[in-house]
Amino acid sequence: MSISAMLTEAKPLFRIRFGTNFSREVYSLETSTDAACKYYQELMKDQNTTNKGKISDPLLFGLKLLSIEKERKTRPLEINSRIRPFSELSYSTKRRKMLSLSQHILDIVEAEKENKFHPTDQIELNQIKFKTCNGLYEINFGQLDKMKEIKKIEAVVKSLDKGYISKEAYRSLARIEPNIPREESIGKGGQRRVTDILNYIVPSYVKQGILIPEVSTLHIRISGDGRNVGRKVKHVMIVMTLLNNLSGLQKLENYYTLVLYPGAETYESLKNVLVPLISDLCNLKKNGFNQIGGNHWPVELYFSSDWKFLAICLGIKAANAQYFCPWCDCRKDEINIKSKTINKSMDNIKKNYNQTNGHVKEPLFHMIPLKNWVCDELHVFLRITDRLWELMLSDLQRETRDEEIWKIKILSEMQRLKISFYFWREKTNNNLSYTLLMGPDKLKILKEFDLSATKFTNWLKAGVLTK
Image (cartoon, rainbow, N blue to C red; front, side, top):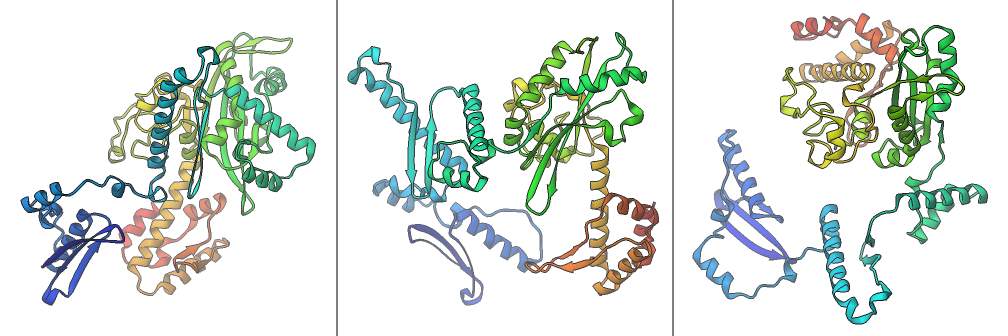
């Protein structure tokens, strides 16, 4: 075995040559650990074992030898050679370096301003700009004035509407002038007040006997989701309904749109758009609903959506994160534990979201108690059926040598059920793709699809899936 470590274009190259006449080789341009791991994997392949042991890379490359230590101490320390180019750094490292440099400059200004200016001048450092080879970075000091920022965005929106400025023209202007609000802060959308909708529907519910003045509580459910409109355009919609009318929950006319805007369902866009709605909901939670010329109604708020949208609104890192559960501290490896109960509280998450497992941002609808957050059952079942269908097709691919046989059988079964369904190969990676099924088709497949027609080699599995 031959081991070497050298510099190539200011980068380390760790190389291990082994085998007969050193015919085999592994190397790494990253670290000695990476090279040692690659060597160990090749060694385990030769022995047909799956040992999870490790090799000490400092010992393997002799980095702990006394002669190496003595040589290292005799050489001058070159700090600059250890600094990586800015373009090769991660986003968090870039941000940390910029903030560190900005803080250093701020400290210098604070220390020197008394020697250069009169105390009544009140010199303050408000902003620093850095330009690198791959971009422009702007650091602002002090507290962000949210009201001033909102007024600025509103002024820009008014100018866009009055001047008939298109989105393409605004993008061109934003590339020239980086100080104007970004496109994600400005967009065409619509909102309606919760109180206006309640003033419209409450009188009719009273006439129908669904609501009883001075007795009933308004149970308001807020729901939201994103959807594709065409290939590239996406819309996000927030709706409300009164849960008091249980018999009408499945009827479309009992749902009222609160917010509709073009864009993706991201935390930043929702936070910008939902400011008026959040204010109205906080007021309803605290003071109830005062009907115009009518009664006062207590209010109980609820929230329902698919898991992704729910996680975004709760400020969770991701729906599939290590701590994914909105209600408890369950980890991925504890997903089968059924004894877990709701041990989070909305008040605690709002105050200490940085210290709550899984949460990275403040929840948007913080006025709704966590016990009233519900993941939509329909979305869960649709995703479960998608996953079962995907697993069945993967089993067929694994168990059947001739792919065309089971594909023909599935297509014939789909024709029998009168469902439009096709298979095809992706041009980029040659992966097998198929038609995505809609709700009614999924229900028909669950009820009437004959799994035995696919000729599973594992008949027991087919029987279990059918049940």
